[in-house]
View 1 (cartoon, rainbow, N blue to C red):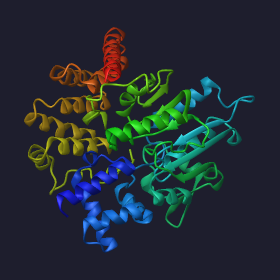
View 2: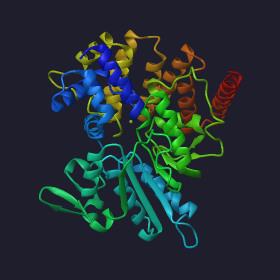
View 3: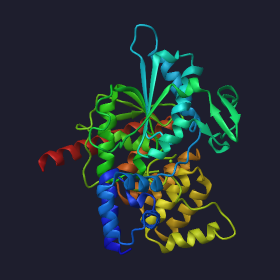
Length: 429
């Protein structure tokens, strides 16, 4: 496949599903396209692109190759802990109020959506008082979700009492109680498409984890606008851990509950919260669960005799910095934070002026609860670029976690000046 032909297909995928090929590695995308072409018995990339433009089923098959899920029940457990707390405090489901509406998007193979249903029942909320919708761009993932039958890989962590309560083991799979499965409505949808799900009533809560990190700049804007439209004012949004800060620019405020990765939609609208177009959200603004774009399938393997950290670090120095950082982010996405930290530290030895690398190192250390080291790396990123938006917002959240209200206020003031400057420049154009 020639580079121009691949670039045309890459551009098409960016336009249709919002995929940023750098987020998973261009080689990964190229390999998936090559495999799809072989399966379709099409040798010419130009001809294959024509087929993708006209044949929805072939496009779906390629999307299936690019969106391999990596998820499990009650992933990011504190998200569900905070959800139950939030619902108790807001009392959204009590008599006289409208029914609670929750969206899981992208829902992958259904573990997250069913976890939401179980969490609501555990919180004592009657099933008739809530509605859960779940959507994903991958039709095969939706079909798997509807089957509600899972292998052991979908159950991780120490707390698994829910498995005995809601599942029965049969023919090598854990099958969800049909009464629970019936509480979730699954459908396919493209979350970056303009006005997607436009006929649905806005939701009180949306789970949108680890999709933003795989999208192009334009697609991220479309996703944010769709979420803004689909979420009620002051509604609750759950994201991936690094995405919380990315959503600040769209008018969301992070909640103060450790590792919940949640934020609240405020009155600050997307149009009001523009940032300068030159400040593209790159690198660490995308970093961890299953989502669009080969969800972690292309992440480097765990250390082995043939793929040791030393050899991986050598490759990181030899390949383009964007690709190396994308693979390190992939490790962090899979939860391999220690190895990601080692790889990123080695990367910085050869790229000492990479603000993206320092910011990513800050994120990794934040996830490891090494707050002092995280602060050091965010400060290094800001030393290289005092207006580096991603580092500013992550450092601000870090100060909030540490309870340093003074420093947090200073960073928030800088962020606010940044926003206003961006809006002013935009209006002047």
